[in-house]
Image (cartoon, rainbow, N blue to C red):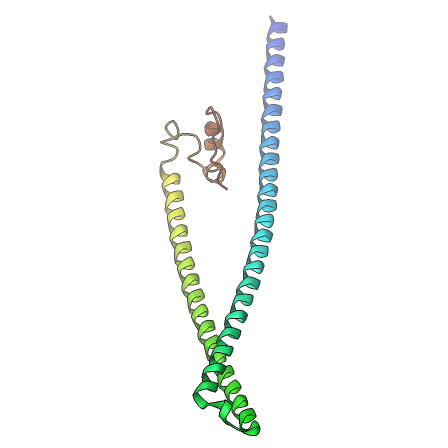
Length: 195
């Protein structure tokens, strides 16, 4: 009788040890997956940033080229107009040179004014865009805060009804280990793919 009890106790202890080892392995595997996902995410972000930078650089060069061509066309057009208005061809050589110099200065001033207006417009657009981005970011932060508040209040009551993919892994971490263990027992992919 005593031997049977001892064997039963030993079996229970062995089973408990196996359960503990399995739990620790699962935890370690979960952490490894999280770490790998984070590394992959950082690599993707770096690649996306590099591609975005290269595209922006190419666009900037194209815009600069287009602006230079447009300015040169404007320059030639205005010089021709001024020459016609002042009837340069009827002047002597000295007066022609003086008048052409005057025209070039006037045209460069016009081009500089156009550049300043263009830069001012772009700076205003950028400021408006940044303001809108900050506003949207504030809205997203408020929505996320409210979502987390609702989860903390109601997630445990809805545990049996939440479809897979609704919760992100960060949400489950926030809701505690007991919630995580129960949620992980659900079939299918428990977590949303969002990060």
